[in-house]
Image 1: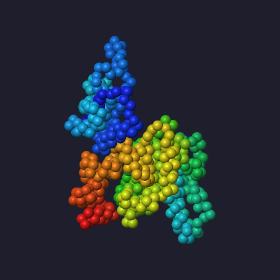
Image 2: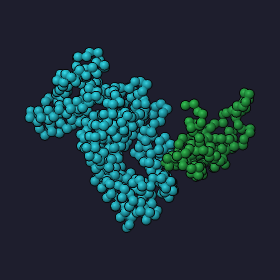
Image 3: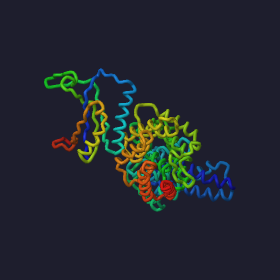
Image 4: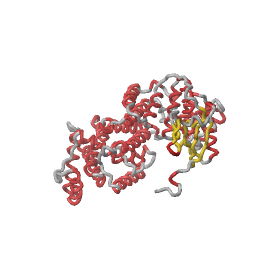
Length: 121
Length: 409
């Protein structure tokens, strides 16, 4: 079994406020989608959502506010799935609720750190 | 005399486990069989003596006195052995030669708790933990344990023998875990109690009184944990709540012939309101702290099953989502799909069910049979026929045959 990270990107506007009902509906979409993957025993880690608060740190102690200026689509969260193939992971990504918000999913294979050569054991 | 005959098996069940725990703690796993033999001899003598002379005024005190004397006699008679045990006992208490077997209520409870932690040890497989718990902590006979596991006495004897050997080899001590360890060790204990309960609740055995006893014993042991300050933790209360909610439907979910009755076909007037109320009490007590265990989620699911509001299936669906994200199990995956059929309809649930990868699972084909009923009856029949081939339980077979014949009408 292999692991893939599903990384969600979408345009985010911190000024948009959802009503409690809208929020409830969005949460339900995500819970149902993740529950569906978990029911197939393909959810390895439910991951996390990422907030607006943040900064980008560069060489020479250069710190800028969040990644907002440079990229239109921000990473809003990630999960880790376990499937045999990339194709299966892509199939899972197709049901992601992020598309309802105009976003996209990046599917990436995961390379466990422990098997990297040169790792101190 | 008739009354006495009823009383002896009852005393056996409750007192056997208490005396075995105390003597077992005294002798340690190294000589646990001696403890078991002494207790068996005590009860044999009780059956004999009481059969002739009638029940003594204080039967429990009689049993304790006889068990104590037999233990002391044993130690005196087996000088060689006793040296070894004395050495071991000396390790625990400084007064080496003062043999005192304490059968006070407090020491009984303490010994049972310590025994529980000793038996529920990951060095032996879960099945062996359940078997040993049934034998030592619940006073079940080998035949009853075999019946509960749908196997024979020989298999159980071997399993228990190997488990005791392993506990000896690993030098597992019958003691309460240290403060830092309680929570992590408690997880294993809770898993075993959960499985013990499920063994009774979901067993294919048609011995209904036995199944009920398994559930009651699991509840009694969980209750012991709730009664102890160090182990009275939210997850323990959540597990007890889960057991209360489940038990409340025990009568309703078993048909006349021991077959399981589908939730939607249950006679809700058979639900036990008192157990439901108790479940709510323990679920409230469990709702502190910020760790949500799978027992919390399962108890909440079981709670919603005892209620009747229109949106209950949506709540149940979300809880199954949470449960599956916490920990996958095929049964939770199937139950989530059933909840889906209640919220978004059978057609959409069928699409989700097909993704589960549970082809060949008896319950999967039962669920598919249900989902396809009145949607596509030929597929429903095909699934029920597959299920029929996969189950061994006669009562369930009869039930599935009835579904098939109804669909063919």
